[in-house]
Image (cartoon, rainbow, N blue to C red):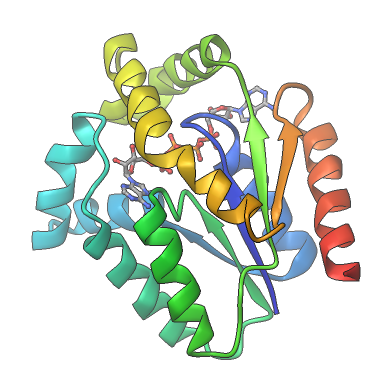
Length: 193
Ligand code: B4P
């Protein structure tokens, strides 16, 4: 199985690159952001709890997202592999993901980290906010808050995978296809190991 963690700050291009990577490698896309937004759209209890946190630019509790990923893994026992987009976002989530995959005798193949400076992230998300209707893209103060949340809670996850020799950083500035090609080079190098 090919299991890729696509990593980066909010607006780095994780969702954008995921769409291209799932097509090329026949993987299942697991975006915790998309799963949470779907719960919100359906008005579930989980969605109602998550909405307040997401709209405030905060992470939702680990156990909530870990539970969502656990059920998606169980629903797709014959998958060729998964792209984890926006997950794990904390070290406890990364530890839980390793434990979940171990149940299937699987593990993470590599982490592809998209590196984008903060001023570009803010620009991209404000632009997306003009059409996405996402409350968390609506204003700069909120976007900065998401970046702070990323720097304090999520950035350490890179080190977790670096310690396992699975961390690969890519410059996330440039044409979408150029970034995609660089991501494929990393993934194919991991597959060859
Ligand atoms: P996500 O849905 O994961 O949102 P995101 O980080 O903002 O999106 P992403 O990074 O995928 O956006 P993309 O670059 O594709 O999370 C939203 C919220 O959900 C979180 O704040 C949190 O509250 C909660 N949540 C999700 N997962 C969680 C977890 N595991 N634990 C706890 N809470 C969790 O796109 C950005 C824009 O850039 C797009 O408009 C795109 O067109 C543009 N773009 C992409 N590539 C570009 C390029 N190369 N050049 C120019 N523009 C580009």
